[in-house]
Image 1 (cartoon, rainbow, N blue to C red):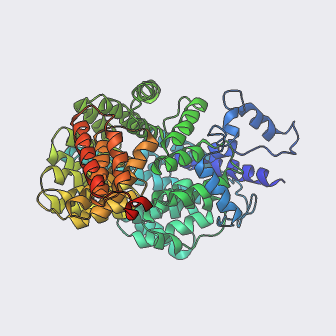
Image 2: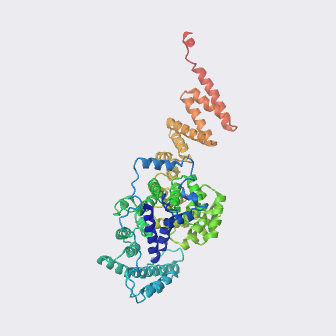
Image 3: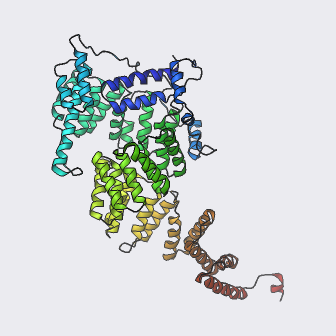
Length: 604
């Protein structure tokens, strides 16, 4: 069996088993990966797998089979970085294709007896699919077998979750806070912990047990249980995702006792992305593209990483290609809408909002995209309406809380903004955007010390984002504080973090000038002037830089440099032109007082 064929066998069997247990999200993930595997080069053309691959590679989708070929001719800056990393051996991948520590899963009948156990399971599964969870659990009472036991417990768990949501709405409204808990947790924990203690628990029961422990706040034990689950059955992406949510720092990640399997690479890449280690995530995804060459999931993760690295143009190209290959895709399109919002691409965002509205307007991601569209139009009330709709559909939708906070700031509704940001932080304390939003809100409220606290939190989580350092510097620079030396330190960090807006260099020059550090001020004005010339920018900052440099070089008696900047200022028509003329007259007077040092002068 070829290496890639072994991947297919594993994923095909895993998708069936996950679907049989009603773990539909994980089953969908496995099935999508299954058809994303690149065909074997030497595979017979008549084989079923080749036929399936050929059927998928229609003219509309064949471009996806060439990973990132839609990027720039030089294959983009990040691709060059990945190649250099691979050449130096920095990428530590798990075993190559087909290598697995566990035998391929084979579906079985789970020991169904002849007295209609399988028929009862089919009935219970039908009830489950109709969201009649308690009927499903009741149908399986007294049935033996691991599959029936899992579905009964899972149905009870979801029945408890459904009732919890209903009680929260009854007590506090659709977006209210409440201490309501799942009433089934205690009995399910007792049953599953007993099974684990006697060693008769399988990977799916371990996954459910981990969910229960996480809900109860027993995070350390939940990590251990999720690790046991994925080590036993590594194809359950839902278990990997829950484990990822508990890995809030690199220390926790490195301590995980995970066995080597190719699914581990997907987990590490996704976790690196969540921990803002985007370069490491991109390296992992580049390795995985060798097998899953047409994977839309991997492409969307790469685009998300590039967006986080502020490489917006390259990320946009990948998102466009994803939408072209799968026009009804909604997953990750909310990230794409954030990108279009940042680039102020109104027409593209309008098109995307219209498309998802027609595809599935009651998906949380669709509501978020439409909210971004209204926000870009300046209709903040409508934007909030759609963010609230997204949160009614999924109250743990992190981006919606954060972005709704931004909208409330625009509407000058600071109490609502603070509440939205705090709700986002409760869901994910590592969301730097929510901390940054809190800092901005308290800055608007003229509470600079509170603002500084939140800006520091955001910069610790995202230390390479120049915008956070600029915001902190402006807070130090504000009237109540006037801590200019601290502001200079922050602007320096921003300048070293690829400040694309050029705010840091200009402010560094101004602050050094205010503090009387004329040499440092001239240095930063010159750097800022070079940046503006390279970018072809014009404006008051350029005039300010040339005026300062002309005066500085005049004071330093470097008359040629001073004259150069004065002459450039003569091209302007405002008051700076008259100032430049005055400076030039002063330069000529100063030069006559210091005649050139030539032989004739000394001979006289």
